[in-house]
Length: 335
Image (cartoon, rainbow, N blue to C red; front, side):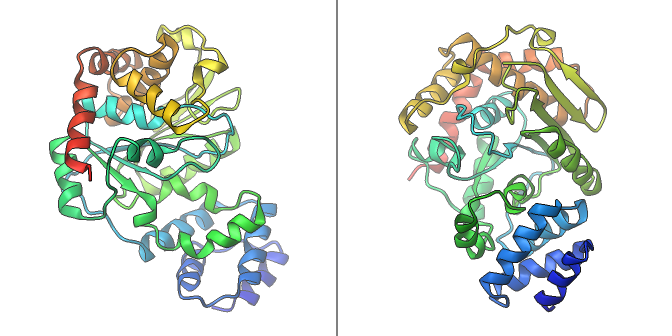
């Protein structure tokens, strides 16, 4: 594949095929293209907008050149956000994962260190003494015994390190900012995704339909890439598309300051612990309950009402099961 031919086609406003963008990733990992051409490609795609097939091809390439995570479990969920909303929220998706696991569902959480907030999933997990690993025996023990496994992105997506310096130099979002939620190396059949805007919601909706998985996509109308309860929020799943008010789930409207993750990693860790220990601010607990509930509904293939799912999530925290799940996870995975 000649990158100059790809770039000429893009200048003519042509779209690339899924196979072509997959091959581009493979070529990047073999150092077949100069950085200037990769920079031109990423800039062109960002200006034009990536298509569904192009995004899927990049996903295919990252999974093909990375380390697979083969879990001996058939049905499990990942809860993740696209990031980039610059709201510096606490670790809502990660906390929700332990609430879902505490409720008896299997979870394979994929994450990384923070990019635009104080504390990402990997930050808060590592700050509890967890050692990241790609050892499949240990990872399978974690999902089988604790009900949840954590997959640290840097151990699996090998292609990302080849474009890291270019992405940093460009200083604007690229197609790789959209790929994080799609490259969980265990390839879960269920996913709850938070997006920062409705354009992303439409894009991922089409992607998930092509992948054939059970999904929920959420967006808070005021710009959060999760259910923040600070405003109305939209949810799209395999079964419906609907705008909810916090009151529809029995929750008060949250204040922006109640969603923030603090100024340090330690403050973010304290909020995470407070939710699981059932001593958080009511708004913090409610936000996690809302996100966990929609994740549970995805796992249930939409067969349970969201009200039922909220109560399942609430019982996970109130009974101490979410906290016990987290403690078991740390016990299995700590250094």
